Image 1 (cartoon, rainbow, N blue to C red):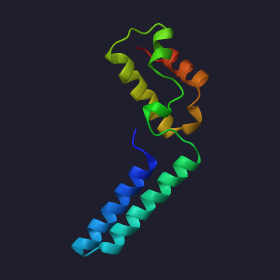
Image 2 (spheres, rainbow, N blue to C red):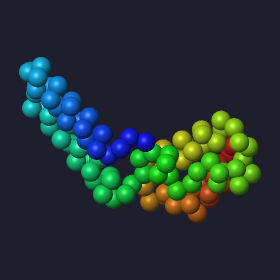
Image 3 (cartoon, rainbow, N blue to C red):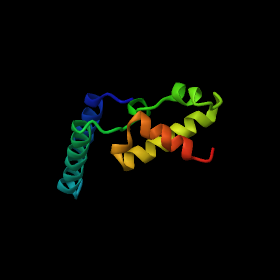
Length: 105
């Protein structure tokens, strides 16, 4: 998982790169970077899930539910992450277990 400060530093580096190249639509590019920074800060402030590590369920939980320890665990976790990114309120263990049980896998 990328550290918060590294992501923000990456955005600052991108902005410096834009400024150094003196591109035509500089202000537009900087506005987009600022929008990304604000969105990221908002997501982190609300403690929303951005990675598998922040998901309320993990591979061990799935194995305990009877899933085989294979690549399908990662695929399933990725699907759950997509669901949680779309609807952050679903990121709790009980709900995710219910979702997993309802999936035809």
